[in-house]
Amino acid sequence: MDPGEARTRALADILAAEDTPCPNCGYNLRGLTGDRCPECNQRLEIAVRLAEDRLCMLIFTIITLCIGSAPLLCLLMIAVIAFSSSRGRMTGSELWWIVLIPGIFGPLLGVGAGFLASARGRRWFRRLPDGQADALSIASALTVILLAVAYFSKMIHEIG
Ligand SMILES: [Zn+2]
Image (tube, helix red, strand yellow):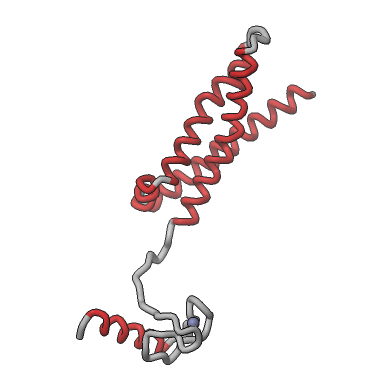
């Protein structure tokens, strides 16, 4: 039996026992013996896929890092513009909140998001042991939340 025939046979074995919708049109393929959907005529094949795909966690982490990075980079840009237009000297607190924290975390989170979005980063993330991938997602979310809370309370403090 050639591999193609074996796959068609395996497909028929699965479809003999289970209600399975066609991925294209949703037609119930139960009992199908060939390799084409009777409804939409698309060719079907069986494939091996990951039981638990990390795509969602990866996307979540990338979005979280972008959400953290973008406002910090904006803040840094504003600080650079304000500084170069020689508005005067910055106080220690200003330097800390609009230069140092954005200067460190903005690029760091941005580079992290860029790396995870790259082909190499995606592969790296998928190969991490389960606990480490979870820890990385949670750590990036916590970092962004802590930064948001810190800036928010600083803002309220300034206004109040
Ligand atoms: Zn179909």
